[in-house]
Length: 515
Image (cartoon, rainbow, N blue to C red):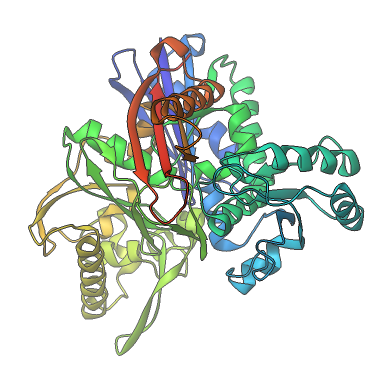
């Protein structure tokens, strides 16, 4: 029995095969393609051919992708969204999309409305729903809306109003309209949770394209395997779950990198730097898992509150473009991306990239150094020094104390990283470092997590914890976990002194093995 891990990056699509003992049999790297599907197919085909493994022996296929992240960052391939907030009269002073970057808002917002409804923190109704408000809005956006997001005040405590509004929306806009319910995506905090639901709706098309692309590629190669996608917490979800919640793939690239880096290097605590062709991502490895962000996470300039790894991403990578002369130059954030083998100088193109600089300095592509012979060595050294100081600053931002740290370096673009960095004790480059994301994807378990606020005047702490635990287990099952393998990863309960009624916030995460 074997499993395949795939990572679809902005520049390359990597694939690897692991045996039943999780040993890496083979790994490959192929250019990402415009249609995504072709890149997935090419990498799958190549890894099977090189490993000479019968496709019938493949039991699991796991895919991680940065496509959803790239779609938001680049403002491309996004659905327009009709937003319904259930919150009148509680939140009418603040409109949906209020804190969004204007360019992203123009791409995503079709229309929005605040309708009657909402709950108090303990589940008491603020006001009743009004069907006419919802129906009138849906008639207004009918034929224009590509997806719908619904968010209600304290819906993680009681989701009935969101579910009811969704039924009314489908009555008008049809059963096939993609709908995102905020209680299923974000945590307590109306605006951040609402933003997460809107982004999830905006990513419906992208998520579906990647999911169906993988499914079609497997069919073409006669691979009859269970399909899973990487989530941003280092765990997996099944195909149906991925189509419904594409936002959970955001950040999974660096998460897979962190998991894969730990597995290959045997290091449990370190900074991980994953350098691709489009971006460099930094994360923290804590006891073999990515450190989760404890604050609201910004995605494409939008504040959200769904689970995310604590990462920093920057447009500094192998395909990053360099412009200007020795007296004034600019590095990125533009990248040639998957066209690096056509446009970079080192491959015969006309665009100066950081890979060209690395080649001129003798760090890569020694057989192609003649293609960069016209580059000024002093110019390249200045660029390299700027790259060095930028990376050192980023590493300092991720550290929790002033001590030097181990750095695990991964990714095909790691040729741009200097051999020594201030603040770094050891730079560790593990085997298969250039396909570590795909390897990390193949290692995942399945998770479920739930966060809710309760009034202990109405329910005991123990019963509240059990209720949240059961819901988290149900989520893990929906995502593809085997019931008898599910265990609790952590339980967190925090008294909320600023709320009446002896309030408490409970957060539980569970993980389980693949079905």
